[in-house]
Length: 108
Image (cartoon, rainbow, N blue to C red):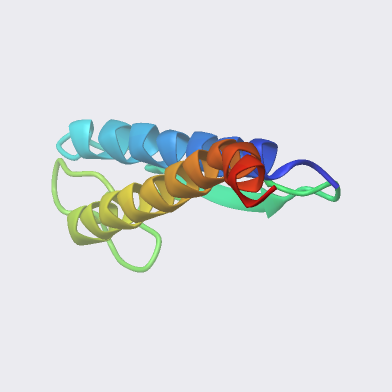
């Protein structure tokens, strides 16, 4: 089992990768034949998560618009919002764990 700091750091890293991938997908929205990348979070046996980036399938779920890509802008924006919330939650956990030794000193 890893420490709370390590688990929070892995969550922050996962969120940052999600933001990077969403930005990449959005930047290429008008690139003909572009296959958006996808991120899957894998739970590690010792704790924490690791992002795995894979190439998407062009036109999955429908045909591509002429000269367009398979990027779903609404989905990417939702992904950005969720990544922000996940990052903030992990940062808060990181901060709380870092403050715990001081809290214990006050109790003693």
